[in-house]
Length: 247
Image (spheres, rainbow, N blue to C red):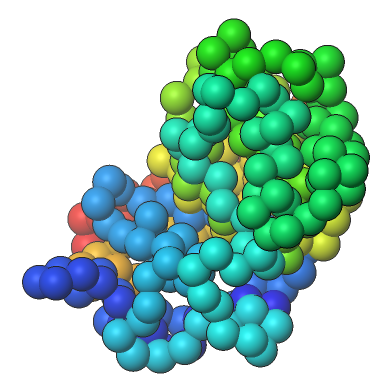
């Protein structure tokens, strides 16, 4: 379980959070929407142990977080892949840095590539891949680490609409396979509802979270995107978003 308790956090001259509390259970996915600059990425850095709270505590399974904690998987909009490595080497890199032997890490990397549907790309180099393929590789690299907490910062925003939908479906499928606590930051209300078992709107300064009861949470139907229930949920979340931003 991730627990953020009474945290103040920010940067010199900029208090982003004054009193932030949040808990996240294994298997639970929290999607966070909010305007640019409101603190969404800061929340991820706090949850990843990359930003120390000025006050309060951040723990995962009752253990404090530190930068580079192997229990944390972080997927960014910019894929962070190395062009001088091939795909399987990129996916295995995190395991290598944590001292996992070559045979074990290569096996884990190939298994992760299969899980995200790009095992055929194992020997290709990053520069030969499309944006969607690169993001699948970035997800596979994190998946191979078997994290307890998955943090994603607008991972699909740079992709075209069809590729984005394909990767949203992939992520939903992956998250059904493992009990991973997940926070996904997005600008897309539709994406927040498709993926999140819980949805939160970040707003205000200092920032705070207002939670929205996702009426389509757990609906894995292929027809969800075109359903009346989904359109109604989008309209309701959009209305809440507008009300909070103009309050």
